[in-house]
Every structure is written in C-alpha cells, then in structure tokens.
Length: 263
Image 1: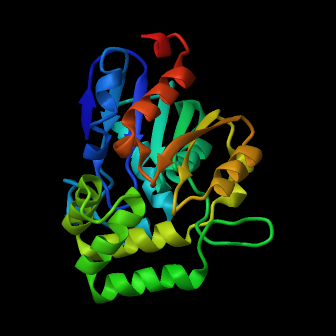
Image 2 (image 1 turned 90 degrees about the vertical axis):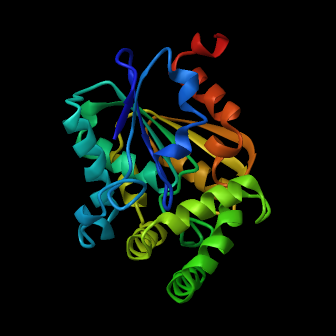
C-alpha cells in the first residue's frame, strides 16, 4: 500500500486482473496537488505478500472487495472516498460500496463489466463460455504463451507495442497459481443482480473499441445503476488509463469538480 499526499479528498485506485498499482502512474501526477491518493496491490498481485493469498477467499469478487475495505480500515478512512477501479475492480468497488455505502463519495469505473458472458437476448458481455474456458485452458498449458496472447488483446495494440509488453511483463510476474484463480474469478463473475443495490453515483468510462467490454456493456451499466454518468472514450483497447491517460484525467476532473477541468 502506498499513499501519495496528506491533504485533500481521497482517491483510492484499484487495478485490474494481472496488473498492479504501478498501472496508475500515468494518472496520479494529475491529482497530486489536489488529492490524497491511495494505491495498493491485491493480495497475490504486484509486490504484495504472496504468503497471505487465500484461494478460497479470492475465488469470489467479494474477496477482493474485502481487500478494498481492509485498506480503508488500515488508513482509518471512514467517508468521502472516491474509488477508481479498472476492469474487474469496477465490480469490486461496487460490491465494497454495497457493504459500506457511507465510506464512498462516488466511484469511477474504467472499462467495467458486470459479466463477461453473453446472456442473450438481454445481455451481451462479449464472450461465450467456451471462449473463456479456452483462455483458461491455454493458461494451464502454456502460461507465458497465454500472457503473450492476452496482452495485445487487452492493450488494443500489436504484440510488440510498449503497452502490450508492459501488460505481458505484469502477467508473467504474477504467480501462475494466483493468476489462474484471479482469472477464473474475473471471467465467470456475474454481478448484474448487484447493480440495483448501488446507491453511490458512478462515472462509467467506456472504451469505444474494447475487445473485453463492448459498448453494450457500458450502456447496460448506465441503464441499471441508479445514478450514473456514461462517457465514451475514443480509445481502442481495455486500458485507457495507460494508453490514453489524458482522456481519463480529463473525464475524471470534469466529474470530480468541473472547475478542476479548467486547471
């Protein structure tokens, strides 16, 4: 866990599957003068203590939501937190806000999806069950090959691109046992039924061309959350905070405080 700054409203950043807190390094400088920023790695990710990983706990998105609450408790955060979550961490943050609504002021959801699976005709998450099972099978058979295949899919660029290499390196640095559990938890989670329980306002930052979270997913979230703002970013890929940080910063500033967007 790392805290930047001592004053101002709290921004709490939660990384996506296979990533770590360093993925926010392109965003945090923009808020250094105005916010206290909290970054952390989920247990088993980044530089966290691998010995503390509990396979049963992290077989559910709720286990990761508890990590978020534990971080807030460790810092004695009681209210006013703006949660910023990427990908599966959007669902993590939503679950945390259900458990402790008084803790959160609002949530910023980057590339969110409540469910990766298609459930026609009402919901199109982008994947058939066989697609995701094939990804897990590749992971089991050839972990490095899986990382090298998935990184450009997520980044939206060619395999040799800088962002693809950064993501692949992050995947490969994660313990394969931990990554396998996190992957299954991420790919097969279904949090659609939780959406009506969300009481905090949310900013949905949807990527225009995202192989993991199609536009229909952002529209679904927008229509099922009580208080949400949907903004489509002109981004190809699933990691706008890394590939197009200026767009994410601008959207966040406008949402957090319209006056900040003029700074």
